[in-house]
Image (cartoon, rainbow, N blue to C red; front, side, top):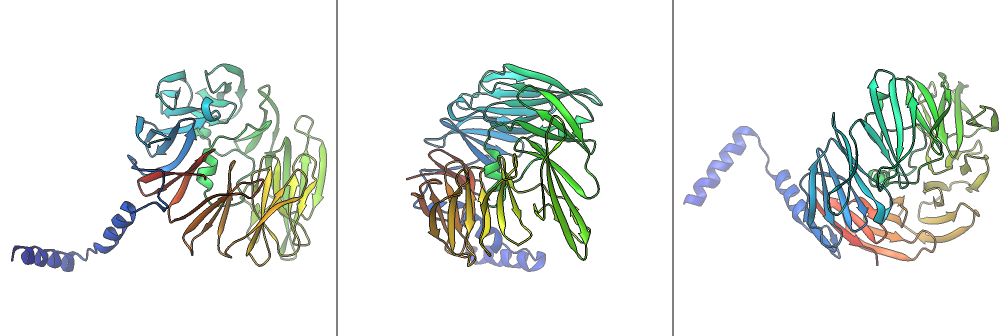
Length: 423
């Protein structure tokens, strides 16, 4: 009778308030179920909703809103936790550091396993993290900012330079610079969270201008200003000017590469759509897709191409219907016209390394260690060696990929996270 009374009260409450507990119950069951089958090496509950998880040596750095956690890569146990307004990982594998920033208190670079501070920059209000350097931004006043390059391991200063304009708009970690973006949207946040090698040139967007910085010596080479019909980015050691002009109901494209020191034109191509423009006015709101020194474009004959930003060479040209799917600057993933096959191309030679049949609606991403193919319909996630095509992973999962390392993937659903080892 008591149980019936409780159920009656609950039913009355639901009818009066309109509250539907079913979605919350389904969400709870989903979040507490298995992350994958076979199950991950370990499964743990994070302190918040993870946005990314970067493997750093023997630790995994899990970033969440307002918090950063370090966990053992072997067991998933918490090694340390800190409050953070922003955080990221710099350095490479065993030499990595977690960069933790607090507003008004600068940043600390800490050991991923112990949480002990290796070095500090109390004046930094922003940072960009790479495998070989940490760039910090400090601003004493309006228009009085400096950019400093540090060794990730010990904070040793490589160079320091003034950065003109109101640089405070770039406060935070890894704020967007004017370069290329990942072609594939699949697992983009996880891929962007992993530190990459620092490019030879970077383009800082300040005061509607592009400040072109030589990262080897810490010198501002020039300032570029885009027009109403052009977008300027810095990719592959060149300043690229993409122009889109409306004409006869279409956008007419041209692409020019300039030398960063002199500003002279190095190469120029017409009819190459970098997918930066949208709308009837051909407004260019997006950075071009690509990675490293490689750009993705569609030629005037509607064929997808991968182009070397430095000299304008076509590294690969698709057949009619083939589509560029993903690239890391070294390898390219191409989808067939019927969408049921993938092939991986070595961009250094242009040769096809391997091919693989896939579901037509599968999603593709390429990381430093694996080509990932996700099939939502079948609920599967597969991984292949980028160079050989050797299978590295084959699981059933509806979880998201939060990060990756040389030995496996970090996956998660809600606050539940786990580590999937490569075979």
